[in-house]
Picture 1 (cartoon, rainbow, N blue to C red):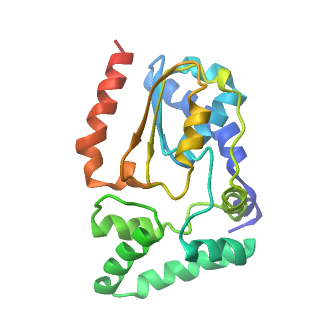
Picture 2: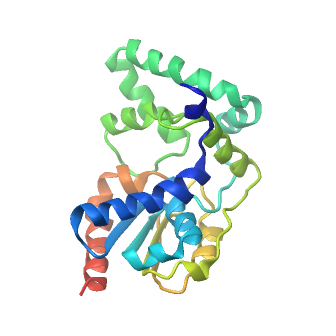
Picture 3: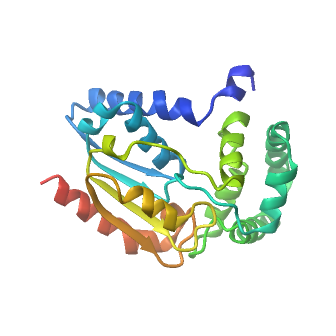
Length: 238
């Protein structure tokens, strides 16, 4: 809640935190290389982190990008559009504790179905997920783990249909990318145009009827995708 907690943004975690995390894990485990799997911002920060420090590619056996937030689009949901257009930056930080308090005070039998309804209608998922998962996802929207500056970074990028710039030639590690056909956060087609220029793109897949968070929260991911991704990484590691 202090000044520093409010001012950090995507560039800092991409340019500094990502590379430090990779180096720390390698030092702690003793492995020469590791696999990195990131979803949304976690995927985008890997791309930007490697762009800024290309030597990190040599420390990665493979890079898996799940719905990477590289090319955002205006959401189709009218409520989300209104919030993004009308609420000023400070409003997001004020909203965080209010939403958290409301969630604590709302009875479970009301909160669970409401969370499920809200997350689906906001376009965050399209495949079946559990009600408890919906509640957890709802609790982080707006993201309680972010800063005002970071939140505004993504809002501005979405409002402008903007993309994150990077030099694809610097991303030299084996890369696998998965996007959803019904993602209301990123532009899947334009994301493919960015990703397909990577020098060692091993696989690009657009999963039908998947929203932005389905790769993490959907019941179907364990059955439909995780085994496939694991097999692809095992092939790289041979």
